[in-house]
Image (cartoon, rainbow, N blue to C red; front, side):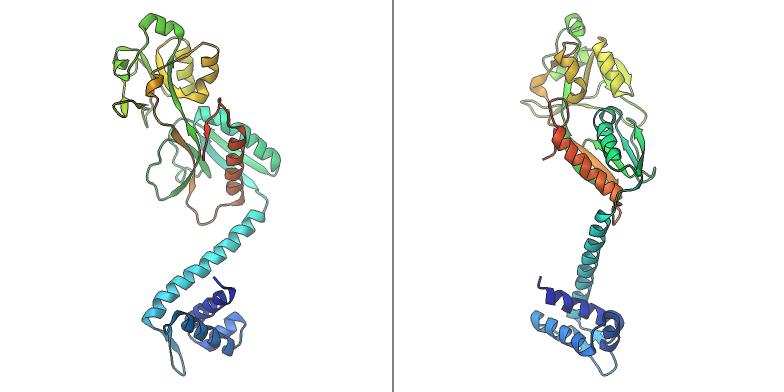
Length: 308
């Protein structure tokens, strides 16, 4: 859009808000003649009359009403850009309140947060690493890390930052004792370890020649901690399905063996969730950008796949 047209739009909006060309001239710092020429030029460019003029006042035409609402939004958007850039120039400060799933938070968020706080020594952080569902808005968190498809919630915004690959595995001792499942339909005949707590139960997902399928359990062992599930699988309690980044070291050294590899489901999104405020504070914006940058730099076989 041409700069002089932005000026014409600003003059038009000022006239409507002020109720006259004279009052608009006072609020904009322009002459009455300059304001009038801007409105005339805008009408000529659009090919419609926007204002009905009398000696004492002005009023909007039907086209003027539609134009005014759109132009007002354009100017508000430009003001928002100015404010956003001004905020980005400020140093992050204050306290960042963040929550994330226990294992992912400890393994992948905490190192990034430590580096971020080292970069901005005036900042503090309150952290909650938990596998329970946290309501970001109700509990006053700045940022939450969520895994899986988002539920509809107009109060929050989301950004995918990485992908989580799930793996089904068991200890060699368990497989020697109970055999290796070759198809998800054989899982009811096995001991399984499920994540479950008061808020949710984790369903195992699979893909295959016949399409997607799920396994609901019930588990032989039900635990509300993914780290405890990992330890239980290594100890030989049964089969477990957990993120690849939690299991790779145990798979490499032989403590766990993957099964049902041909039925691995599509990866799940790992997302940053934050309240849908009109403006993000510098600390929230800076941490999200820093987190995305670090995940892209550190992505490897032991971590979540990078978001593309």
